[in-house]
Length: 225
Length: 225
DNA sequence: CTCCTGAATGCACTAGATGCAAAAATGCAC
DNA sequence: GTGCATTTTTGCATCTAGTGCATTCAGGAG
Image 1 (cartoon, rainbow over the protein chains, first blue to last red):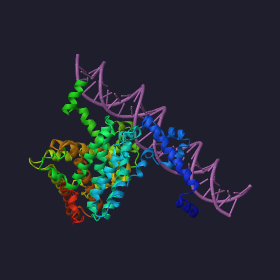
Image 2: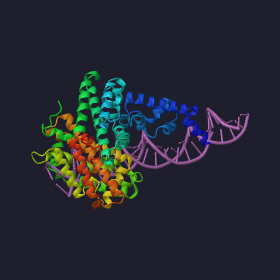
Image 3: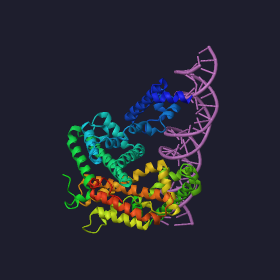
Image 4: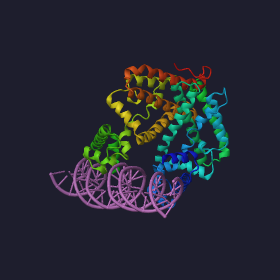
């Protein structure tokens, strides 16, 4: 009966559903552990299934591809930027809200800023950016994030084209900043040591987004110091 | 003797080399034809090898992955933006050179602007953007393009961080514009009909890059008309 | 307890990709 | 031309991701 099913799913209290969710998490956790231990390519789906004590075939009902075992963590965060825009104080420009949100994330050492130097965060970022197939599939989630942000910007009275361009730019820039932070940490710098530079870079990036690259022309491109 | 080999390769005139290049092209052409006929997933490597009259195993010595059969065409274009910056007139801001180059490409209906409505161009663009694995792997080439442009911008006296951010923004925006053009053409509009709008959008995008998104604040985001 | 439904499983199969060693083609020295 | 060394091509075996299908299993409703 799909009525009962629908009710349970909606209610979220179904026993089966909870068990499913736990299984799903267990699989992902097992997979991540193995990947971090031995590298993405070195671990086979079969191996993950064995460790997680499910059949190989079942694993595929939970995760359509090997990459998704790692990346579906991003699904939860993909609309963060859009939410920041929607939650902005009235009268605040969307771009300012995004800047604020990023600076907040940096202070909180959110792992998606690349500024978390815990062993796990570092290893995870390294896993994703160092595995081609993962980095490739990540774009899929990134563009969903762009779509979401573009929608939020349209709501904020941007025309559709501008909204799309702005969204793409913002997400791209944030990802670039995160990469730079990660590279610094991967080079041995602590998050605390990197933080001031990370904040300055973020502010610089959002200054550029707000004021444009043309603002650099006169000073022969040396606006960042 | 690797000396002789090196000389021949450097000279570019080696007979073996030319033959190899021709074989390579023949394989890629065959593959592309089959993909456009039947779709990327429907055509197997084995099938391509048969049509191209080489062994399956040989195909893999020329192209490491199935995706590369399609995408290595992008390798030639990945540093176009960087070249446009390096070839700019003295005193011209890099961003202006990039805008000019894009407007030129639009006029020439370069296929990488998404504004070419020939059946082949349309089908090709559709093939790439409509096949997930291709779109995913395309990022690989895109980021090489960003790297190249960032390098060119550093040469133009941008500081490294700004160069990277600007490069990422420019490439992202150009890709977005191309997507929009392609969507218009896919919807049935002719390239000629789309052209004015494409040029306007390109100019608007580069205005934004130059003047920043902050320039929209006062006019409540309705700068594009 | 019985029945029904959805989840888990086993098995066979396709297809991309890699390693390896044999075979063929090629360019060069003589 | 002949023979030699090197590169290229090829066939074969193998690994792994992913899919389809039919069967089994378990939990909840009556």
